Image: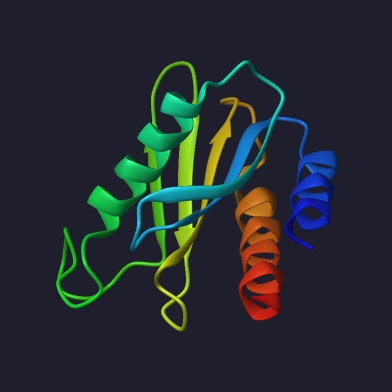
Length: 120
């Protein structure tokens, strides 16, 4: 049931090159959708970066309260990590081109994550 949600999100936002639904507690990508030749090691690195930047559920890596969104921008890509406080182990790891419509993408990605998490 997860793949149709990822496919739909990627169809809506062609600037999103990679989507990966991950379990942060095990640091495992459960399912992914990518238009690039991203290796399993690359997907694992995305998941590890998400887990590191979010920090444990009870002690955020940055700030005083748990975050639901992390954005890391470089010259060539934008990595966006989303989770919900209700299901903090579930994360959507996204790699987008710099020209992504950030506001629209994050809103749609958050809705996608909610659908996937609620179905599980």
